[in-house]
Amino acid sequence: MGCEFTEEVSLLVDGELPPHAAARLRTHVEGCAGCKQAREAFLLLRQELRSYEPTPDPHAQSRALAAILDSRTHEGEDAAPSSGAWAETPTTPRERVRRLLGSLNEAFGVRRLRPAHVATLALLLIGAALGLRWLAGSHTSDGTPQPEAPALANTNRQPIQAEAVAEDKAKKSKDSDAVEATAIHQAKTQKPPRPAGTKPNLRVGRENAQVRRDGYRTRLQRREGLNSEVPREIARVETHALQPSTASAAPYPAGSLRAAASDPALRIGRHAERVERLLRSFRNARLTDKDPTFDVADARRLSKRLLYSNITLRREAAGAGDLPAEGWLDSLEPILLDISNLPNKPSPDAVGSIKERIRRRQLVGILQAQTMLASKP
Amino acid sequence: MANTDAEFAEIFNEFYPSLCRFLECLLGGASGAAQDVAQESFMQLYRTGLENIVREEVRFWLFRVARNFALNELNRRSTRRRLFGKVVDALRTETPGPAERLEAAERKELILSLLKHLPEHQRAALLLREQEEMSYGEIARVLDVSEGKVKVDIFRARTTLRERWQRAQQASAGA
Image (cartoon, rainbow over all chains, first blue to last red):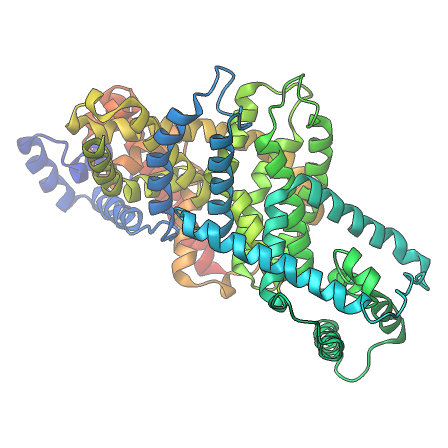
């Protein structure tokens, strides 16, 4: 190792020596143990570095290329002002339609959403609305009075339920895309609408409601890990949740709140929903003094809270061997950390960089998909 | 426009995998960040326009731009790590032992951990030489330094890695 020619051995393995100097050094290396070892070590190192395989992500390449080629179209149509690409509020009806299609593309992972797709979605939404209307009719048209929402036996649950209701309201008012996604999910799980001009079959309606209740109870038992008996406390809350008036008002059946607290998949789903709301509003906010709809301090606080729960959930996912969940939770942390460290008056560059990363990594779409997956029984 | 896009797609598909590998090693194994930086570099190329760069120079141009973006990312992450450490320390749990890992993953991890100890300029020079098989003159153009510096950086990087590699092997043999 202490030979004065060792540095030249590095040039020799790289082919950077003139031919006559290379020949002379090769003769030296054959007789020098230090230089010989160095040469072998350098070549072994080369082999290791060349055999390095980057972490596979088969879709990354095509996704990146598509994003770059799409960027020119968007740049041309946006005609973004000098304040940056983060002035995203649509101004014309055509622009709004394009944004909506973009959001739907992102939500459903479709490269190009065609008008036929939109028409199908619209039909599904109409079907869901008619189905809900029919269901409401089957409960009220038999002349029985609507039972009032019973008070919960355990008052400690009220804040949780209130929070869930508040979340639902906020979700409905702020996030139209998520509402559409929920409606589509409902359309998949609800009955098709009753044909026009026919009377509702009340007996069948009640039987169906019973079947749904039984199905729900089975799912609840499975989630709670109970096969024989539902604890009295849960059963009472569940019964209340199944009353028609409360069941339609609450975003989750009251009994499932307890399940949500213990089921990792549901907790991850709710977490994904919260992060999605934050990132979506951050991505769409102008973040100027004149923008009353977004407060940086609030976003910072919320982001910090979500970061803590994200770390906990990621560690749980890693412990359970859930690699996909660990992966997408891991990708959220740098963004959440950067938002939680924003100053009161962030520079356009700092904000633009975060927005760009949210957009490029399609985080909102990924989170929306996770929320939908978690909401499936 | 269609022709330009087709030419761009061809260049993208040719260089994207190698650029990602270079960036992943440079960024200490952060594959997500490497993909981001690679995409950002190609975006820059797309905005600059292929007509403004000589075809033979595109590869060097890309690696130069990617390395600059990676430097920004490394700076950001060093700041982030300082803040993040406080949170992570509170939640630190036991990591799985070496016996639980696969050998290939171990080797990959070892390479990355060895590379992390090199200064960034040495790491970049060595990776461009060993993985991209660039000559010293080409590396000098990408990194915007002299050929003499490239020669010294590569030799020092190799010497450091060799010593650390031997130390790691001795430690694993003794364990």
